[in-house]
Image (cartoon, rainbow, N blue to C red; front, top):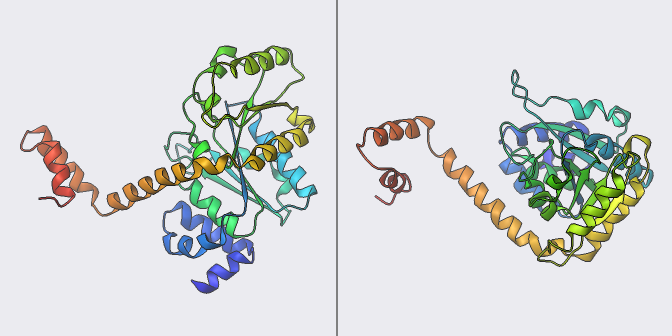
Length: 300
């Protein structure tokens, strides 16, 4: 374990890839325990938004800009789960081929595996891995999400919500969910008609929806396909991170993650057949669900 850890800390690509596989298979707890003290230095940038908004292209351009600054970058691209293999459909990686030979960029595609919220279950642990491996920026791109799939805000230091003009009813983007988690709005494909209207509606909505931390989201325009506005988006992300406001929510975020970790560990203690047998007993009214839970917890 010590040798494996040192290889990761020295950014050995093969060791990192092996560790990432262990994390996805939920078999990396001892390793993560060793790596966690070496994490906490990377800037985690979350990129989310509707399908087709240009998230992958934007993430690709953002990584390229960071590499020009000589920053080591990791990209966690969460893709839909394949109905055949159960793995990730590697669409995002296809768009990032320009980085495949760059030793300063690590790209990992992850399948959602049925998890709602736009993230894969092991995404948080994957950020710890890349952070400990010396990546200065970790970009987490979610699968295309809707209005209430906002798990990325519980992981990222800065959340960028990518929008495009004329993408259906503009009122939809003003609903709770994406509005509340966005630290920066990225108006991509801003060379299209409707960009001015969308920006006005966004900024107008800020007077109606007030965040508890008092932050007013920044709005930047990009044309990611042409590399326009990427530097403005990165500057906006760094501006929010510099305020330190994200530190206020980290304790709350970690409280939630600890509850989830505890839930997973508790479920691992039981054979799945235990729940199936208990379900039949409940259906037949041989017992009640409340007694079942008490017995599983060992209170009786």
